[in-house]
Length: 164
Image (tube, rainbow, N blue to C red):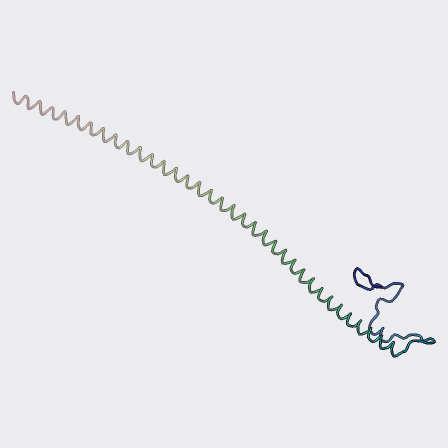
């Protein structure tokens, strides 16, 4: 009996489910009065056997095709899983690279700030030394001027005494 939903034949009431084309072709029927014409029955059974053979071959071809498609699907799923793993790994690596770059940038910023502070401190020290040098030169100049003035005043006093 045909199942209208799936189109498959179901075996009911204990009938054999492994009916082959050879079973159909060589099936023997009992004869009764006014029985069927044996040649017509044989011809009909031959056609049914041929159709069943074609259906079995088509069924096997379709099963083979299904196996191929299932293998392709499994391969595609495996490829998809590998791709997902690769994407996850790439994202993890990208995060690690970004974090490393941020750490390096922070280190460079700190080193630059430290170098800037050191350079600024060095400039401040140089400025202090220069101010001290300038103060020392001013003091030496003032000392020189006062000593030179005293010398000149001493000469002027000597000239004034000499004139008198």
